Length: 170
Image (cartoon, rainbow, N blue to C red; front, side):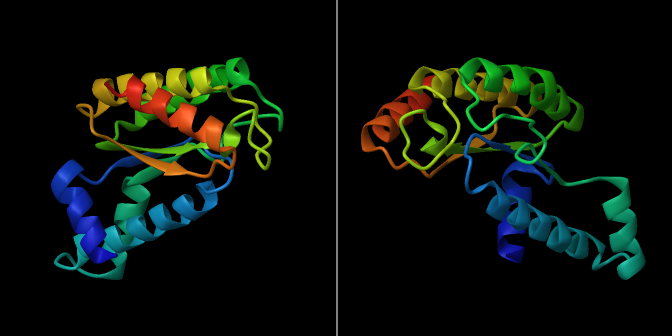
């Protein structure tokens, strides 16, 4: 894990935002980011005086932020509701946070055709939301964005949505 922290620092700096479009894997990523923060704080303070420095760094500056837990979406939320929540909550929070890297979980289990997910995003909605997030990465962190695919159990919806997401990144 320390190697991961060092790579993130070398490539993009310490401040990371996780923007989750998935409905299932967000908790795992939040736990990973919490561990990255913990290890990063220890790594930064190793030369500076131990536990007190770790606590000061944690209090002074959060090193990651996740959008996954803060959105108030109904189980059957559609594109317009999801995009509205991102515009009202996520985009301003990310701008304020000023990350060095935007980590996007493109979880296609939120697709309306997915048999397991409860959200009702369309293929076009995934494309628009991805474009919004890529534009945001261009604005706040010099375009540094990493997309990770997760979930999606309807193969046609998965394939079409992945094409829409890749198209939005061009």
